[in-house]
Image (cartoon, rainbow, N blue to C red; front, side, top):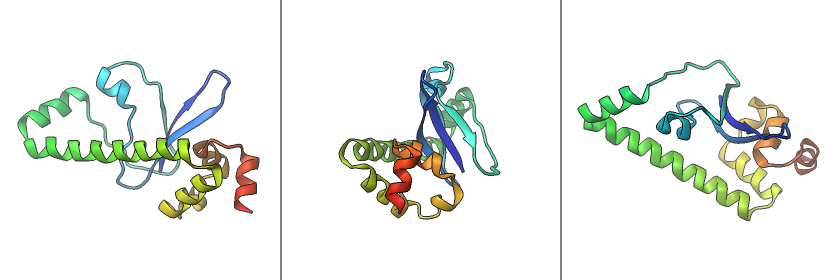
Length: 133
């Protein structure tokens, strides 16, 4: 389990994504533009991390088209998930976002501190406690 987050100038953490087993996580802006990272990626549990430089990724994709197809499918899936997350933040209230998260990832509540779930949902820890009681 990993998380990708951004901490604003006020010190408030905003979690963009949790990554479960066999998921990919990356600061795509930094990776593809070869710039400094804007996201922090932190391991919340023991993980095996595999890294691939952009240069080696491009080389693999040029040489093996099945790898290029694989990366495209993974990227498309991630893009769809982030699009759904943005729409949920725009259209659903906190309780609906919490219920959706628990429906999609029921084990998350046992694996991640409630303060991180609150940061992911964009609510305070106190608001999350009210939602779950």
